[in-house]
Length: 118
Image (cartoon, rainbow, N blue to C red; front, side):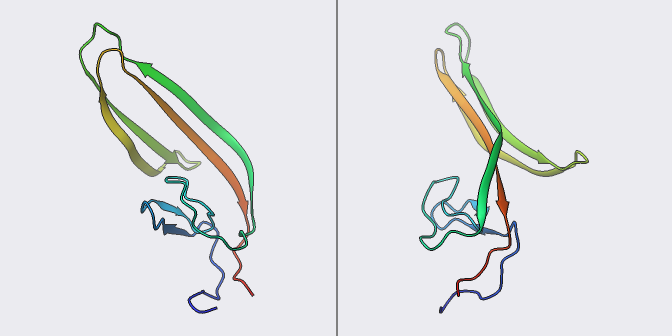
């Protein structure tokens, strides 16, 4: 097919989402950031194994305190404790009686080398 690479992509290959420009896995069917559909062909050889990490928590600003600022940061480290990546996810401010809920999840996906369509 014209415009399709015939070579297999390596596991973990990344690309930019055409909708929101987030860096995503090449094998993704939908963007995890904007949830936009990326491909409508046969899905690559991948299987969601688990969601070993899911955290959700809320912060409620007390009615009698001054304004608060917040910064949500995500950090990924390898087995030696070395930082692989650090991202500021979002920043903002809260006034009296406002609440913010923060969620973080990690999906583990089994993936073999992606194959080109024959």
